[in-house]
Length: 318
Image 1: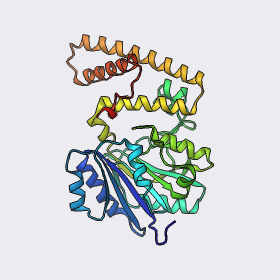
Image 2: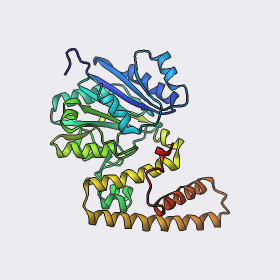
Image 3: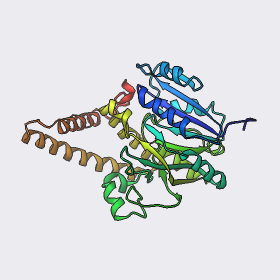
Image 4: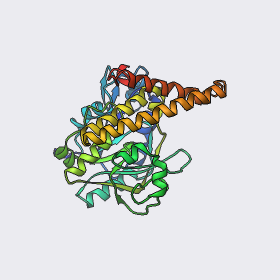
């Protein structure tokens, strides 16, 4: 660790989300007190004026500008390799920190040196809870309804319905806000750049656990999360990336039989839902925009599979 290193290195990856990026940066400065910090913003080939706005309103932010979309993991790793803090705080641009959110987590982790990663409670704009805890993917999580699993087996699959008063050890957390110990990063390694978008934080949590580090959720640290603002801009491409990343995770960490069952199960479900969407759109004369949009998505996913799941599809093609 460098002498006089800051407590925290905030790392934010941006792509064409200027206004929410500015809101995120403002929340950092409004809520951090008693901790030294630096901010790294990696711009992933934005075509808006994000970089100019950050330079104007937050001139102390260290901007790393890339001309193309590197993907989330690769862009984050650029900043991870340059950070100086004791902790890295990975923030989505669509997050707004509540009072003392990061300080609460850092003080907790300072007392628990075995913790490598900790996340807080994510909130919707109306203050209601989002799912902030994740399970390591398995056939159960990927082939059944996650919401149903959380309701039927809350101890095994904790979600927003669970009411925790104190920090709890978990398998994984949602990556919108992650506080990560630098010492642990040096031990485990940076994010796997094979993931372009989605599952990179799940893979990281899994690897941290394999190296003996603990992953925690802190319910008293509150973070507003305007869920999926970046992904909504490129809806179909982002969903294809989700499927690609899911297959990558299972290829890396699961056996052949499990992978075959996963592919078969997902394809059967995809085809059934695709046919049902065709029927529903036909009955409603394609009058419902949301249902038409979903049909386009499923048609793209089916075609992507028929073509052999090419890497050139998804956000990478942009």
